[in-house]
Image 1: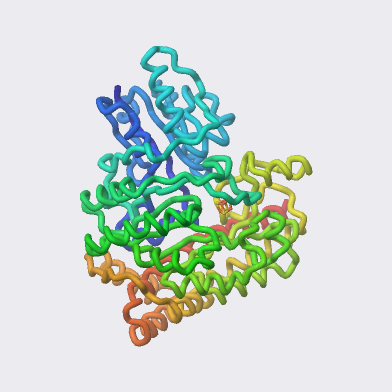
Image 2: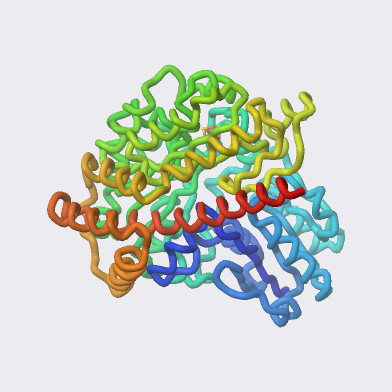
Length: 506
Ligand code: SF4
């Protein structure tokens, strides 16, 4: 059997980092971990090829080669996935689809031959057995959660690691919280499931053996969902392994805000090599937090929590949302103030959207406020329901946040706020590579000479060299990220302006 695994293309979005990746000759942020794991569950004797369309083109000759095309993705990849499915149909090759896009929205893709929904560790082996017996069904689902201790090592050899900025692995699945807008409870459950120590070390060891020496992203929904196991078993083991291997990786992950309450956990994370953590801050407005059941963020000084986490050597990236029913008209200024004061350089501010099957979706459906499907793009100015706040007020307020926090002046100010207080914990020294040198030279050209941020860029360069020289590579990375975010928001605001003009003319 010949299996072609296809990962559809991501559009140019906030998280694609496409404009930044060009500086370091990388093509995509991270590889398709789901498909690489699926490849490991398929029989060894089957031939497998993986095409990540963010890296390579999908050619008709590949489709003709395959007996089955396996497609996986998330909502933002929908348009590309539809094109892939159309091409498979035209080529007469059978399609097998799974992953979040199809698990929550299979109804839109009924032309697909086989759906392997929910957790592939459970549904895929049943499909494979049926296929062997000649009785494969259209759809495989389960309401059980897989034991991820049995999840095999991803088949890294199917990708060219060098094309990615970061490699992703997973230690846990599931989150105990139940935020109204989030689909993690639906997709991964509320009881966190974790891998064991040896499994995590094996995964790290395999990346090390393949020559990987850069960033590793633990793509867990909430890395700290089982704190006891992390502190007693996982983090000490990773720290010891990292020490032994002379700190080959830097780790990124996602966690909930109560990380700030546990100093031992933060110390252990920093010691193990974690440098960045994404946290859903959502909003500084208490009533909006209550509305979306973000209980863990309530009744606490969110700003102080962020500062505390940063002091322990972890850079905080933050998710922010506007468009809650309880948002007051002052929310836009409050969000700007919070983001600037926090020194959260990478602040993803999105309009609230209702994802299929979430509690928010169900509530809005009952209230007759749903308009369309969410695009899955967090920052494209789309909202798929009727907001309580006047729509024009909401959109102009949202635009104001983005135009402010990603304007060169505010962005570079925030970078300095962060670097001023940040304690850089990692033992691994910055390694000067050809890519890094090129990134520096390109930044001089695109940001320091022809970029509209040139004054801010040079101020940051000199400020860092004299005040925080060890943080110079980080300052440069932020400057390059800033370029990406500016490009993204320029594209969106132009699009919104054009839509406004067209609507006024009509
Ligand atoms: S804490 Fe994060 S992952 Fe967990 S339910 Fe809330 S938004 Fe989802």
